[in-house]
Image (tube, rainbow, N blue to C red):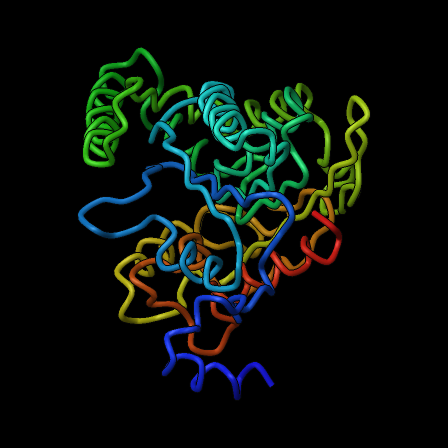
Length: 312
């Protein structure tokens, strides 16, 4: 009936009195926070890290925030920055916002885990996407080729940190300097194991198993999920595909070019073999993803709908 009334009332200038007929499939109780991984930025030159994903969620009623996170740093320091921004959002809401649904890509997943473990009162759910929870061979290769303190290692650090600082500058995020060595230290084999021992919540106890879907921390019930892909080459027009095809050769298991299938497991594993490489889940590069797989925007909308149906 409303659909019939809207055109008629519009002609009379009375449409403002009717409630919006918006799609509310993604309208979660708690805001969604999209936490970027390495090379973190929100927008550079009009290109979003989460390409067209925030708008896809917002079109279905979601409240979405994209924090400013250091391009290269430890997940703990990135996590502290994220906590400060979540507290700012909560304070600005006048009490209407108490918790958040954190969705983290790559290192963004580990950043979200830090917040989960240290400030569970801020967290309603954590979903990690293509996050190397148990490390990545790529980090071991880099630290092996360019050891910290060596001439080659110093040159690598200077170059990588300069790139990270440039990304921060272009993204209008100048709060702290990049520290690529702190980031790498979490993703080599030993560093990942130490990080998981420090923050074990949600990490599977078996080599390729699942963690719990629901955990209780300090009286806070929190849902945990993960998703990932195992296809380095998904679109011949995507300039990242050749790179991920090469880096995938360093793995002994199915992977997305950066994260191994089993390493991505955290909480309840929704799916770990999407036809996606490491960037496809963020709808990058510029939406050039597989035509034969669920579109990343749809994937985010479906996860938001899952959280909504759980009252989150």
